[in-house]
Image (cartoon, rainbow over all chains, first blue to last red; front, side, top):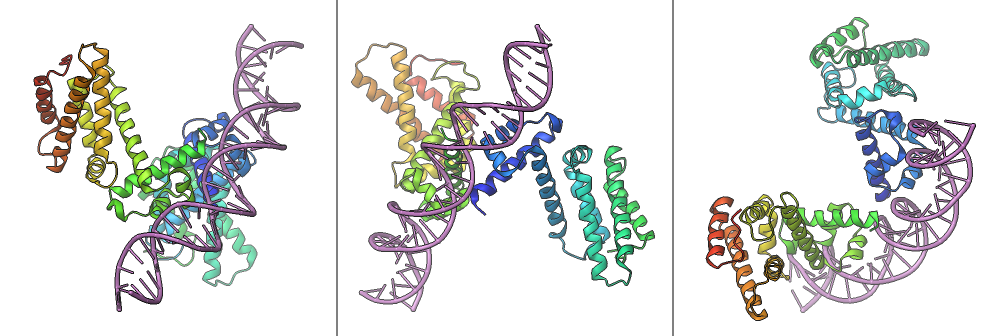
Length: 188
Length: 188
DNA sequence: CCGGTTTTGTTGGTTTTTCAACAGATGAAT
DNA sequence: ATTCATCTGTTGAAAAACCAACAAAACCGG
């Protein structure tokens, strides 16, 4: 991709991230964003149709980053690993203010939905890989059940201003996952 | 000035600064610079005729930055103030690796000459402001005498790997300036 | 000294960004 | 309700940056 596009998109997304941590999303104008990104206002429009579109792309990018950061470092074990879960939660906690805001934005196809679908996808893939013989409907329902549960707990954890440590949260969440026999159980 | 120019020039200069702190100037290629700056090679050429030109502009910019950073914070008193001298030396020390390299580059119209002429100019201006009645030749000689002395001491200080604190260096340099009656003596 | 690789500057055509100007929408204060 | 200011989204022309390709120069290693 063209250097300029990459750099400007990064700058613009970065700008929105910063601003989101500073003030209410609705109060943020395209001008604010362009100014913070040190980019012409028109450039923003050339990449995103409006600030909601931009927010969407930001969320997507942020989640991609989250996934990559969680899978590259110690690539030991595939999806449902306890250490992996812990790692993920820690990563989220590290950017807490950003995620908290993203989770609290109601207007748009919200962050929650993105996060949910990403986890959902992970679970589906995991089930496919392990060749468990259940029909598609059951798989879908199970994946949806689990993903909304996980996201729900994380969301709750945020809204309660993180009432327990990442480790404790992981422990408790993990035992619930075990109870529901998220297959195959890896305790590493 | 156009946003793109400002940003790219900054990136390019920054890149050279970094590289200079890493390896010998002669070993640095335009490619290295462009790569580090994340800029097309052609863009470098569009702003600077070659790496020596770029180095020159870097030096100039760095010195301008040095002057501004020394004059804006506590703008108390005009040029020859002891606190100002100390402040300047500290600022130089802070970016020691960069300045050390810049001072040691022999090839080009070196950093030493720029620094010298900048200080020289300051001294000349100071003499003009205070309306001392001496002929131009004497003024020029005095300014040259003082500026090379100051730069020489700083250069020496670097080459000896800063054998004394910034404060001590300032003290000793200041007393020498006093001995030579740098006018008017402000001890603030 | 030679042959291969790298670096240098330059070119031309394409894409992106910039900037200024626009009309319409939104919002707040009088 | 009306003004005033700001924000929105779009336009067109100009400037800048991009990239790939080039010949010439400089730089090794055998």
